[in-house]
Amino acid sequence: MAEKQKSLLIKRYASRRLYNTETSDYVTLEDIAGFIREGREVQILDLKSGDDLTRQYLLQIIAEHESRGESVLPVDVLNDLVRSYMTPGASVVPQFLQASFEMLRSGQSQMLDQMGSMNPMAKMPGFEMMEAQQKAFMKAMTGGLANPSGWNSKDEADSEEAAEEPGEDLDSIKQQLSELQDKLSKLK
Image (cartoon, rainbow, N blue to C red):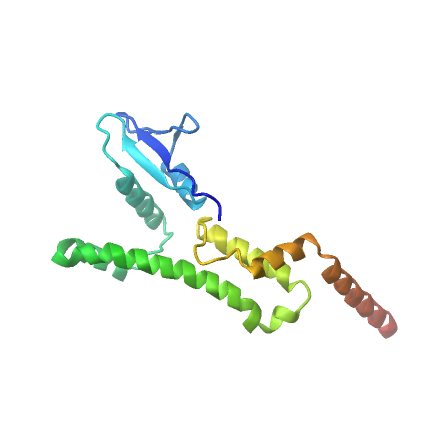
C-alpha cells in the first residue's frame, strides 16, 4: 500500500479567502471537496489565530451539496445528529459513525470481490475487464480512498493483467463474432 500523503494545508485569510499552500493559489470550497474526493486529507487553518477550521468547512461543503439536492443524508439521520449534540451521550456518536463508514468501505470491497464468484456472467468473455471497470468506478465513488480491506487483491491483479493482455479474450470474441457472421450469411 502506498504511503499516506500528508495533509493538504489550506490557510484562511482575514478576507475569508482560502489559500492552498502547496500550489500557492486561492481555492474554493468545491476545489477542497475535489481534493477530498481524490483521497487527500485537508486541514484548514485561520492564518491570524491559528484556529483549526477544518470541521467547519467540511460541514459547509456537506450543507452546500445537500442544499443543491445532492442528498446523501436522510432527514432521519440529520435529526439524530442534531439530537446527539443535545444529549449527554454524544461522545458515542462520532465513534459509531466512524465505525459505520469503515464497515461501508469494507462491505463495498467484499461485494466487489464476491461479484465474480456469485455472478453467472463471470464466465462471459470480457467479464474481467468489466469487473475491473466496476472496481475503478467504486474507487472513484468512494473518493479514491485507499482500501484498508485489500482491494489490491489477487483478483484485481488478475483483472489488471487481463486488461493489459487481452489477447485470449479478444481471440475468443473474434471467433464468436466470426461464427455469428457465418450463421447470418447462411440465413440470407
